[in-house]
Image (cartoon, rainbow, N blue to C red; front, side):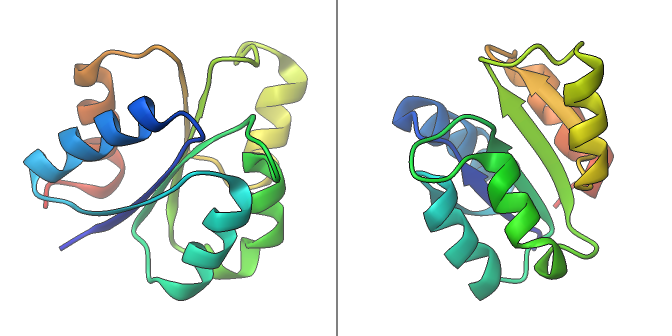
Length: 123
């Protein structure tokens, strides 16, 4: 079963994504900030990481940079509500840390399902 780590400081968003992915059959774990995410990235063999960009303690990009050696082969979706995903600098930065896809909040459930399925297949 594919394992997915969902990282977002907004509990409602984190739990909503987790609920959708659990119903699809994925094994999910969560973290509420980048610091907690780095611990869980190091402790688990992941297939997919869904991570917010702007969070307290440690942001998503910082967590990705810190854990690059643990993320080989892991598909990465960055979610953001605060950064323009059309910004050339943002696109360049996310690609440089191995991000496969960016979703701008709020996104539809169907977009999440399609993106996850495309990146790691069905459970």
